[in-house]
Image (cartoon, rainbow, N blue to C red):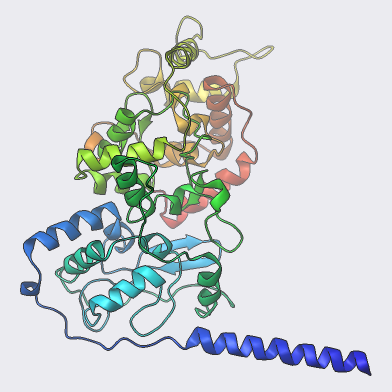
Length: 440
Protein backbone atom coordinates (compact mmCIF):
# COMPACT_ATOMS: atom_id res chain seq x y z
CA UNK A 1 0.00 0.00 0.00
CA UNK A 2 2.84 2.35 0.89
CA UNK A 3 4.45 1.56 -2.49
CA UNK A 4 1.22 2.37 -4.35
CA UNK A 5 0.98 5.69 -2.51
CA UNK A 6 4.57 6.42 -3.51
CA UNK A 7 3.88 5.60 -7.17
CA UNK A 8 0.71 7.71 -7.13
CA UNK A 9 2.56 10.61 -5.53
CA UNK A 10 5.39 10.31 -8.04
CA UNK A 11 2.93 10.38 -10.96
CA UNK A 12 1.21 13.42 -9.50
CA UNK A 13 4.52 15.25 -9.23
CA UNK A 14 5.56 14.25 -12.77
CA UNK A 15 2.16 15.31 -14.09
CA UNK A 16 2.38 18.64 -12.31
CA UNK A 17 5.86 19.28 -13.65
CA UNK A 18 4.83 18.27 -17.18
CA UNK A 19 1.72 20.42 -16.99
CA UNK A 20 3.71 23.35 -15.69
CA UNK A 21 6.26 22.91 -18.43
CA UNK A 22 3.50 22.83 -21.05
CA UNK A 23 1.93 26.00 -19.65
CA UNK A 24 5.34 27.69 -19.64
CA UNK A 25 6.15 26.54 -23.15
CA UNK A 26 2.86 27.74 -24.60
CA UNK A 27 2.76 31.03 -22.72
CA UNK A 28 4.64 33.06 -25.36
CA UNK A 29 3.49 36.61 -25.95
CA UNK A 30 2.01 37.71 -29.26
CA UNK A 31 3.81 40.76 -30.61
CA UNK A 32 1.20 43.19 -32.04
CA UNK A 33 1.02 43.46 -35.83
CA UNK A 34 2.08 46.56 -37.71
CA UNK A 35 1.30 47.97 -41.12
CA UNK A 36 4.02 46.99 -43.61
CA UNK A 37 6.68 49.73 -43.40
CA UNK A 38 7.34 52.00 -46.33
CA UNK A 39 10.73 51.92 -48.06
CA UNK A 40 11.25 55.57 -47.11
CA UNK A 41 11.55 54.49 -43.47
CA UNK A 42 14.94 52.94 -44.18
CA UNK A 43 18.12 54.57 -45.45
CA UNK A 44 19.82 53.30 -48.60
CA UNK A 45 22.92 52.52 -46.53
CA UNK A 46 21.10 50.22 -44.12
CA UNK A 47 19.28 48.44 -46.98
CA UNK A 48 22.59 47.90 -48.76
CA UNK A 49 24.13 46.52 -45.58
CA UNK A 50 21.17 44.19 -45.14
CA UNK A 51 21.54 42.98 -48.72
CA UNK A 52 25.15 41.99 -48.06
CA UNK A 53 24.15 40.18 -44.87
CA UNK A 54 21.30 38.35 -46.61
CA UNK A 55 23.77 37.17 -49.25
CA UNK A 56 26.18 35.90 -46.58
CA UNK A 57 23.27 34.09 -44.92
CA UNK A 58 22.04 32.56 -48.21
CA UNK A 59 18.54 33.72 -47.27
CA UNK A 60 17.25 33.68 -50.84
CA UNK A 61 18.65 30.19 -51.40
CA UNK A 62 16.53 28.57 -48.70
CA UNK A 63 13.51 30.85 -48.92
CA UNK A 64 12.88 30.43 -52.65
CA UNK A 65 11.34 27.35 -54.25
CA UNK A 66 12.53 26.30 -57.69
CA UNK A 67 10.79 28.53 -60.20
CA UNK A 68 9.33 30.67 -57.42
CA UNK A 69 9.72 34.34 -56.54
CA UNK A 70 12.59 35.44 -54.36
CA UNK A 71 12.03 35.05 -50.62
CA UNK A 72 8.46 33.73 -51.07
CA UNK A 73 9.41 30.41 -49.44
CA UNK A 74 8.18 26.94 -50.30
CA UNK A 75 11.52 25.19 -50.71
CA UNK A 76 11.43 21.67 -49.29
CA UNK A 77 14.20 20.95 -46.78
CA UNK A 78 14.61 17.23 -46.04
CA UNK A 79 15.44 16.44 -42.41
CA UNK A 80 15.65 13.14 -40.51
CA UNK A 81 12.25 14.01 -39.04
CA UNK A 82 10.42 14.80 -42.29
CA UNK A 83 10.07 17.57 -44.84
CA UNK A 84 10.03 21.20 -43.76
CA UNK A 85 8.95 23.88 -46.22
CA UNK A 86 10.55 27.28 -45.84
CA UNK A 87 8.41 30.29 -45.06
CA UNK A 88 7.50 33.38 -47.04
CA UNK A 89 9.72 36.21 -45.75
CA UNK A 90 8.58 38.89 -48.19
CA UNK A 91 6.73 41.88 -46.71
CA UNK A 92 3.33 40.58 -47.77
CA UNK A 93 0.94 41.39 -44.94
CA UNK A 94 -1.11 38.18 -45.14
CA UNK A 95 1.30 35.41 -46.14
CA UNK A 96 4.70 36.91 -45.37
CA UNK A 97 6.23 39.00 -42.59
CA UNK A 98 4.72 42.38 -43.56
CA UNK A 99 3.01 42.70 -40.16
CA UNK A 100 6.17 41.95 -38.23
CA UNK A 101 7.81 44.73 -36.28
CA UNK A 102 11.58 44.79 -35.94
CA UNK A 103 11.12 43.43 -32.41
CA UNK A 104 9.21 40.43 -33.78
CA UNK A 105 11.86 39.85 -36.43
CA UNK A 106 14.60 40.04 -33.79
CA UNK A 107 12.80 37.55 -31.55
CA UNK A 108 12.58 35.06 -34.42
CA UNK A 109 16.33 35.32 -35.08
CA UNK A 110 17.35 35.34 -31.44
CA UNK A 111 14.85 32.93 -29.88
CA UNK A 112 13.25 30.92 -32.67
CA UNK A 113 9.74 32.21 -31.98
CA UNK A 114 7.60 34.00 -34.57
CA UNK A 115 5.41 37.10 -34.18
CA UNK A 116 2.36 35.24 -32.89
CA UNK A 117 4.36 33.12 -30.45
CA UNK A 118 4.74 29.96 -32.53
CA UNK A 119 7.99 28.05 -32.15
CA UNK A 120 10.12 27.75 -35.28
CA UNK A 121 11.99 24.62 -36.29
CA UNK A 122 15.80 24.83 -36.20
CA UNK A 123 15.93 24.05 -39.92
CA UNK A 124 15.76 27.85 -39.75
CA UNK A 125 19.18 28.26 -38.11
CA UNK A 126 18.22 30.68 -35.35
CA UNK A 127 20.74 28.90 -33.14
CA UNK A 128 23.30 30.74 -35.32
CA UNK A 129 21.36 33.91 -36.08
CA UNK A 130 21.05 34.57 -32.35
CA UNK A 131 24.71 35.65 -32.55
CA UNK A 132 23.92 38.68 -34.75
CA UNK A 133 24.28 42.16 -33.36
CA UNK A 134 21.22 44.39 -33.00
CA UNK A 135 22.61 46.58 -35.79
CA UNK A 136 22.93 43.69 -38.24
CA UNK A 137 19.44 42.42 -37.38
CA UNK A 138 18.10 45.91 -38.07
CA UNK A 139 19.86 45.95 -41.45
CA UNK A 140 18.47 42.53 -42.42
CA UNK A 141 15.00 43.68 -41.41
CA UNK A 142 15.33 46.80 -43.56
CA UNK A 143 16.42 44.78 -46.57
CA UNK A 144 13.69 42.15 -46.34
CA UNK A 145 10.98 44.72 -45.68
CA UNK A 146 11.92 46.51 -48.88
CA UNK A 147 11.66 43.44 -51.14
CA UNK A 148 8.69 42.87 -53.40
CA UNK A 149 5.70 41.63 -51.40
CA UNK A 150 4.59 38.23 -52.74
CA UNK A 151 1.31 36.61 -51.74
CA UNK A 152 2.26 32.94 -51.54
CA UNK A 153 1.47 30.28 -48.94
CA UNK A 154 4.10 27.50 -48.78
CA UNK A 155 2.93 23.88 -48.45
CA UNK A 156 2.32 22.40 -45.02
CA UNK A 157 5.29 20.65 -43.45
CA UNK A 158 5.31 16.88 -43.81
CA UNK A 159 6.25 15.81 -40.30
CA UNK A 160 4.83 12.78 -38.49
CA UNK A 161 3.59 12.95 -34.91
CA UNK A 162 5.05 14.03 -32.52
CA UNK A 163 7.48 16.12 -34.60
CA UNK A 164 4.59 18.15 -35.97
CA UNK A 165 4.02 19.54 -32.45
CA UNK A 166 5.96 22.79 -32.45
CA UNK A 167 5.73 23.10 -28.69
CA UNK A 168 8.47 20.44 -28.52
CA UNK A 169 10.85 23.13 -29.73
CA UNK A 170 10.55 24.79 -26.33
CA UNK A 171 12.37 21.80 -24.88
CA UNK A 172 14.84 21.78 -27.79
CA UNK A 173 15.63 25.44 -27.15
CA UNK A 174 16.08 24.78 -23.45
CA UNK A 175 18.59 22.03 -24.20
CA UNK A 176 20.42 23.35 -27.24
CA UNK A 177 19.84 27.08 -27.83
CA UNK A 178 22.56 29.31 -26.44
CA UNK A 179 20.91 32.69 -26.90
CA UNK A 180 22.78 35.95 -27.25
CA UNK A 181 24.87 38.09 -29.53
CA UNK A 182 28.45 37.12 -30.38
CA UNK A 183 31.12 38.01 -27.84
CA UNK A 184 34.64 38.53 -29.25
CA UNK A 185 37.44 36.38 -27.88
CA UNK A 186 40.00 38.77 -26.38
CA UNK A 187 42.78 36.20 -26.89
CA UNK A 188 42.30 36.35 -30.68
CA UNK A 189 42.97 39.15 -33.14
CA UNK A 190 40.40 41.31 -34.90
CA UNK A 191 40.46 39.30 -38.14
CA UNK A 192 39.82 35.98 -36.36
CA UNK A 193 36.96 37.49 -34.36
CA UNK A 194 35.38 38.95 -37.49
CA UNK A 195 35.59 35.54 -39.12
CA UNK A 196 34.12 33.85 -36.05
CA UNK A 197 31.21 36.30 -36.06
CA UNK A 198 30.45 35.65 -39.73
CA UNK A 199 30.92 31.86 -39.62
CA UNK A 200 29.08 31.24 -36.36
CA UNK A 201 26.41 33.87 -37.02
CA UNK A 202 24.99 34.91 -40.36
CA UNK A 203 27.05 32.36 -42.33
CA UNK A 204 25.79 29.46 -40.12
CA UNK A 205 28.47 27.23 -41.66
CA UNK A 206 28.18 24.66 -38.89
CA UNK A 207 24.54 24.05 -39.80
CA UNK A 208 25.78 21.97 -42.74
CA UNK A 209 29.39 21.16 -41.86
CA UNK A 210 28.80 19.80 -38.34
CA UNK A 211 27.25 16.40 -37.56
CA UNK A 212 24.02 16.41 -35.57
CA UNK A 213 22.81 14.34 -32.66
CA UNK A 214 19.60 12.32 -32.54
CA UNK A 215 17.65 15.45 -31.65
CA UNK A 216 18.83 17.37 -34.69
CA UNK A 217 21.21 19.64 -32.77
CA UNK A 218 24.80 20.22 -33.81
CA UNK A 219 27.34 18.10 -31.94
CA UNK A 220 29.57 20.63 -30.13
CA UNK A 221 32.30 18.01 -29.71
CA UNK A 222 32.59 17.58 -33.49
CA UNK A 223 32.38 21.15 -34.68
CA UNK A 224 32.95 21.35 -38.44
CA UNK A 225 33.50 17.59 -38.56
CA UNK A 226 31.31 17.17 -41.65
CA UNK A 227 27.56 16.78 -41.97
CA UNK A 228 24.67 15.85 -44.21
CA UNK A 229 22.70 18.31 -46.31
CA UNK A 230 20.06 17.52 -48.91
CA UNK A 231 21.52 14.10 -49.66
CA UNK A 232 25.10 15.38 -49.96
CA UNK A 233 28.00 15.14 -47.53
CA UNK A 234 29.19 18.55 -46.32
CA UNK A 235 32.95 18.12 -46.08
CA UNK A 236 34.75 18.41 -42.75
CA UNK A 237 36.33 21.82 -42.22
CA UNK A 238 38.36 20.89 -39.15
CA UNK A 239 41.44 18.68 -38.80
CA UNK A 240 39.44 15.85 -40.40
CA UNK A 241 39.39 17.70 -43.74
CA UNK A 242 40.06 15.10 -46.45
CA UNK A 243 41.87 17.57 -48.73
CA UNK A 244 45.24 16.00 -49.69
CA UNK A 245 46.78 19.47 -50.02
CA UNK A 246 46.01 21.46 -46.87
CA UNK A 247 43.86 24.51 -47.42
CA UNK A 248 45.55 27.89 -47.06
CA UNK A 249 43.96 31.32 -46.86
CA UNK A 250 44.32 32.10 -50.56
CA UNK A 251 42.82 28.78 -51.63
CA UNK A 252 39.88 29.12 -49.29
CA UNK A 253 39.20 32.69 -50.43
CA UNK A 254 39.33 31.55 -54.06
CA UNK A 255 36.82 28.85 -53.26
CA UNK A 256 34.49 31.14 -51.31
CA UNK A 257 34.40 33.87 -53.94
CA UNK A 258 34.54 31.81 -57.16
CA UNK A 259 33.64 28.27 -56.14
CA UNK A 260 36.90 27.05 -57.61
CA UNK A 261 40.52 26.58 -56.58
CA UNK A 262 43.25 24.99 -58.65
CA UNK A 263 44.51 22.84 -55.76
CA UNK A 264 41.12 21.59 -54.61
CA UNK A 265 38.53 21.67 -57.36
CA UNK A 266 35.05 23.10 -57.81
CA UNK A 267 31.98 23.61 -55.66
CA UNK A 268 29.00 21.40 -56.48
CA UNK A 269 25.58 20.52 -55.13
CA UNK A 270 24.21 22.65 -52.28
CA UNK A 271 27.51 24.57 -52.08
CA UNK A 272 27.03 26.03 -55.56
CA UNK A 273 24.33 28.60 -54.67
CA UNK A 274 26.22 29.41 -51.48
CA UNK A 275 29.33 30.56 -53.34
CA UNK A 276 27.16 32.36 -55.89
CA UNK A 277 25.74 34.40 -53.01
CA UNK A 278 29.22 34.94 -51.57
CA UNK A 279 30.55 36.36 -54.85
CA UNK A 280 30.04 39.90 -53.56
CA UNK A 281 31.77 39.25 -50.24
CA UNK A 282 34.57 41.71 -49.51
CA UNK A 283 38.08 40.30 -49.57
CA UNK A 284 38.57 41.42 -45.98
CA UNK A 285 35.58 39.37 -44.85
CA UNK A 286 36.61 36.42 -47.03
CA UNK A 287 40.08 36.35 -45.47
CA UNK A 288 38.52 36.72 -42.01
CA UNK A 289 36.36 33.66 -42.64
CA UNK A 290 39.42 31.80 -43.90
CA UNK A 291 41.42 32.74 -40.80
CA UNK A 292 38.70 31.42 -38.51
CA UNK A 293 38.05 28.19 -40.41
CA UNK A 294 41.75 27.41 -40.81
CA UNK A 295 42.23 27.76 -37.06
CA UNK A 296 40.25 24.49 -36.72
CA UNK A 297 42.36 22.56 -39.19
CA UNK A 298 45.70 22.61 -37.43
CA UNK A 299 47.52 21.77 -40.65
CA UNK A 300 50.21 23.87 -42.14
CA UNK A 301 50.79 23.92 -45.87
CA UNK A 302 54.11 22.09 -45.55
CA UNK A 303 56.02 22.02 -48.83
CA UNK A 304 56.91 18.34 -48.48
CA UNK A 305 53.25 17.40 -47.95
CA UNK A 306 52.19 19.42 -50.99
CA UNK A 307 54.96 17.89 -53.09
CA UNK A 308 54.00 14.37 -52.00
CA UNK A 309 50.33 14.96 -52.84
CA UNK A 310 51.21 16.34 -56.26
CA UNK A 311 53.60 13.46 -56.95
CA UNK A 312 50.95 10.90 -56.02
CA UNK A 313 48.40 12.67 -58.26
CA UNK A 314 50.84 12.65 -61.15
CA UNK A 315 51.69 9.00 -60.63
CA UNK A 316 48.02 7.99 -60.59
CA UNK A 317 46.93 10.23 -63.47
CA UNK A 318 44.88 8.20 -65.92
CA UNK A 319 46.87 7.66 -69.10
CA UNK A 320 50.23 8.65 -67.60
CA UNK A 321 53.28 6.48 -68.28
CA UNK A 322 52.87 5.00 -64.81
CA UNK A 323 49.19 4.23 -65.42
CA UNK A 324 48.28 3.33 -69.01
CA UNK A 325 44.91 4.43 -70.37
CA UNK A 326 43.69 0.86 -70.08
CA UNK A 327 43.75 1.21 -66.32
CA UNK A 328 45.30 -0.99 -63.66
CA UNK A 329 45.16 -4.71 -64.26
CA UNK A 330 43.72 -7.40 -62.07
CA UNK A 331 45.12 -10.91 -62.32
CA UNK A 332 43.79 -11.47 -65.83
CA UNK A 333 41.73 -8.51 -67.06
CA UNK A 334 41.30 -4.74 -66.66
CA UNK A 335 39.35 -3.55 -63.62
CA UNK A 336 35.71 -3.08 -64.79
CA UNK A 337 35.52 0.50 -63.60
CA UNK A 338 38.60 1.43 -65.60
CA UNK A 339 36.75 0.69 -68.81
CA UNK A 340 33.83 2.84 -67.72
CA UNK A 341 36.22 5.62 -66.74
CA UNK A 342 37.95 5.43 -70.08
CA UNK A 343 34.62 5.66 -71.87
CA UNK A 344 32.94 8.54 -70.01
CA UNK A 345 35.55 10.34 -67.88
CA UNK A 346 38.97 10.15 -69.49
CA UNK A 347 38.31 12.82 -72.09
CA UNK A 348 38.54 15.46 -69.37
CA UNK A 349 40.18 13.61 -66.49
CA UNK A 350 43.20 12.05 -68.15
CA UNK A 351 46.84 13.03 -67.57
CA UNK A 352 47.52 16.55 -68.77
CA UNK A 353 43.84 17.55 -68.74
CA UNK A 354 42.64 20.95 -67.58
CA UNK A 355 40.71 19.62 -64.58
CA UNK A 356 42.13 19.43 -61.07
CA UNK A 357 43.62 15.93 -60.66
CA UNK A 358 41.00 13.73 -59.08
CA UNK A 359 43.58 12.53 -56.57
CA UNK A 360 43.64 16.06 -55.09
CA UNK A 361 39.90 16.49 -54.59
CA UNK A 362 38.02 16.13 -51.33
CA UNK A 363 35.16 14.53 -53.26
CA UNK A 364 37.27 11.48 -54.10
CA UNK A 365 39.21 11.43 -50.81
CA UNK A 366 36.23 12.03 -48.53
CA UNK A 367 34.53 9.43 -46.31
CA UNK A 368 31.18 9.45 -48.16
CA UNK A 369 30.59 8.41 -51.79
CA UNK A 370 27.40 10.41 -52.34
CA UNK A 371 29.08 13.58 -53.58
CA UNK A 372 30.92 11.69 -56.32
CA UNK A 373 27.80 9.73 -57.23
CA UNK A 374 25.72 12.91 -57.45
CA UNK A 375 28.34 14.53 -59.68
CA UNK A 376 28.64 11.54 -62.00
CA UNK A 377 24.86 11.14 -62.24
CA UNK A 378 23.86 14.80 -62.48
CA UNK A 379 26.98 16.60 -63.67
CA UNK A 380 28.18 19.96 -62.41
CA UNK A 381 26.36 23.21 -63.03
CA UNK A 382 29.26 25.43 -62.03
CA UNK A 383 29.15 28.51 -59.84
CA UNK A 384 29.06 31.86 -61.61
CA UNK A 385 32.74 32.45 -60.84
CA UNK A 386 33.75 29.26 -62.68
CA UNK A 387 31.11 29.15 -65.40
CA UNK A 388 33.42 27.43 -67.90
CA UNK A 389 34.01 24.37 -65.71
CA UNK A 390 30.77 22.50 -66.25
CA UNK A 391 30.43 18.73 -66.42
CA UNK A 392 27.71 16.78 -68.23
CA UNK A 393 25.41 14.35 -66.45
CA UNK A 394 26.04 10.65 -67.04
CA UNK A 395 23.28 9.20 -64.88
CA UNK A 396 21.18 8.27 -67.86
CA UNK A 397 24.06 6.58 -69.68
CA UNK A 398 25.21 4.38 -66.79
CA UNK A 399 23.30 1.61 -65.08
CA UNK A 400 23.74 0.95 -61.38
CA UNK A 401 26.47 -1.64 -61.98
CA UNK A 402 28.46 0.77 -64.15
CA UNK A 403 28.05 3.51 -61.57
CA UNK A 404 29.25 1.24 -58.77
CA UNK A 405 32.20 -0.03 -60.81
CA UNK A 406 33.18 3.53 -61.69
CA UNK A 407 33.01 4.70 -58.07
CA UNK A 408 35.09 1.71 -56.92
CA UNK A 409 37.70 2.41 -59.57
CA UNK A 410 37.92 6.15 -58.85
CA UNK A 411 38.30 5.53 -55.12
CA UNK A 412 40.90 2.75 -55.44
CA UNK A 413 42.88 4.30 -58.27
CA UNK A 414 43.07 7.95 -57.25
CA UNK A 415 43.43 7.47 -53.47
CA UNK A 416 44.89 5.03 -50.98
CA UNK A 417 41.81 5.34 -48.77
CA UNK A 418 39.66 2.34 -47.83
CA UNK A 419 36.77 1.39 -50.09
CA UNK A 420 33.48 3.18 -49.52
CA UNK A 421 30.94 0.98 -47.70
CA UNK A 422 27.31 0.50 -48.77
CA UNK A 423 27.77 1.81 -52.31
CA UNK A 424 24.57 0.10 -53.43
CA UNK A 425 22.53 1.95 -50.78
CA UNK A 426 24.13 5.26 -51.73
CA UNK A 427 23.40 4.64 -55.42
CA UNK A 428 19.78 3.84 -54.61
CA UNK A 429 19.55 7.11 -52.67
CA UNK A 430 21.03 9.11 -55.56
CA UNK A 431 18.71 7.41 -58.07
CA UNK A 432 15.76 8.28 -55.86
CA UNK A 433 16.88 11.90 -55.78
CA UNK A 434 17.11 11.88 -59.59
CA UNK A 435 13.52 10.66 -59.83
CA UNK A 436 12.37 13.41 -57.45
CA UNK A 437 14.34 16.04 -59.34
CA UNK A 438 16.70 16.70 -56.41
CA UNK A 439 20.04 16.13 -58.14
CA UNK A 440 21.13 19.70 -57.49
